[in-house]
Image 1 (tube, rainbow, N blue to C red):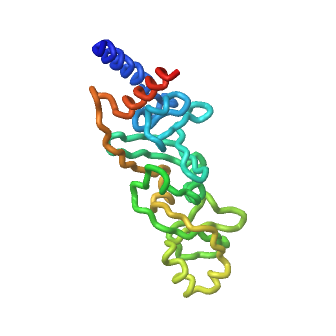
Image 2 (image 1 turned 180 degrees about the vertical axis):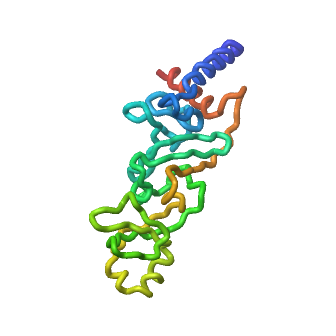
Image 3 (image 1 turned 180 degrees about the horizontal axis):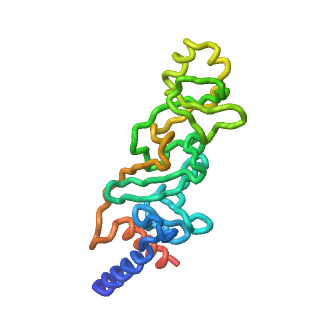
Length: 216
């Protein structure tokens, strides 16, 4: 009897593994596989918590939802280096990422992050800021970003500028957020044991499923 149970278990593993076959949202989209899963296509056991991806309504983009309603488009997933490339659908990282908090996610920026202060200034002003944020300017004003630790020391030498510019908010991002079309996140995936080549999380899922079936 035990050999039949074992064979049935292996067959169940094969079937469950088929549920986790890689998916894509578009012809040019990145393949989505463990540790990621595609919502509404992959069962929960196909990926780790926090690695859920979804397709855009028209199935042309792969979407990652981050905390505080930050939504980005995933353009590439490198499973070897454990990193993803993403872009902002509105092409304005300084606006899209202003409330981003990655502390509750499995991700972190691949590049060093800095605290920037964003200021709105009149068009006639010529401040010595680090970056000009063109996607946020308009209505007779421009938006500039300055290293958060240097902003006040700069203004101390130019009181008129301090009066004409208005601070908007702080931003914790890499330098690349101001001049690149995409950014990179990385993750540290825990090493998971395997049984006959299958992830232990999948085997655990089958055991729980079998236990519920017996109890019903």
